[in-house]
Image (tube, rainbow, N blue to C red; front, side, top):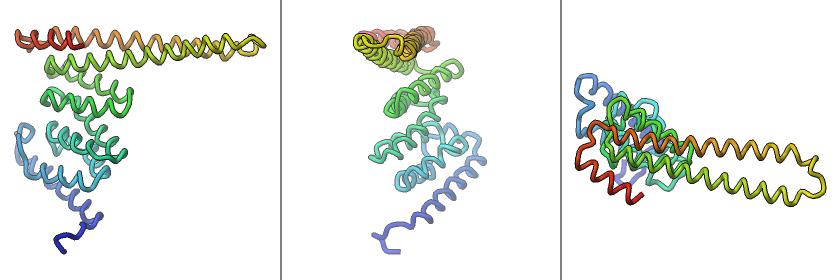
Length: 239
């Protein structure tokens, strides 16, 4: 094949699957593969995933835990997120989300980037990401800096919900002011609007409580030493 020719998509995808299978077999012969710092095969898979696109990312999403370390999977997700394709960005965020339950094995910056990827896909995915990191913190331990970052995301979600609730309340006032002709006819709509406001308020309170719980978890982190405490105070002033 000519040096400047484009690879055949079907053959490239087949090679990617074979490479993934080969890496899985190689892992079975090495009991400490999860602690490796570099793998030529994993690096090759990463490059191929960027070229193939979201199809390769979705394949990894289903099976990366038996083939890649959390750091390798997070790096692939981060690189894939830099693509301008929306489908690729969504798939890479899903991959990043699947890595966050292993946050205890990730570097601080890797975890932060994964959280940002999830945030870019919407509030619901960010909530799932924060919950995943908290779950990891209760089992294997997570850096206090990461937990503080999670609390900031909870706070951001709380303010987003507060803004949405304020907008709903303003709409309700406007609807009531314009309702001169038939208040009885509009009563079901007003009742539904009030129920929505109540649900939004409950969601705000839940998010605020979640942020406070993460802060408490940060203070109780076993690795929270003098330097960590100083860093926490610095981050708190920035917040």
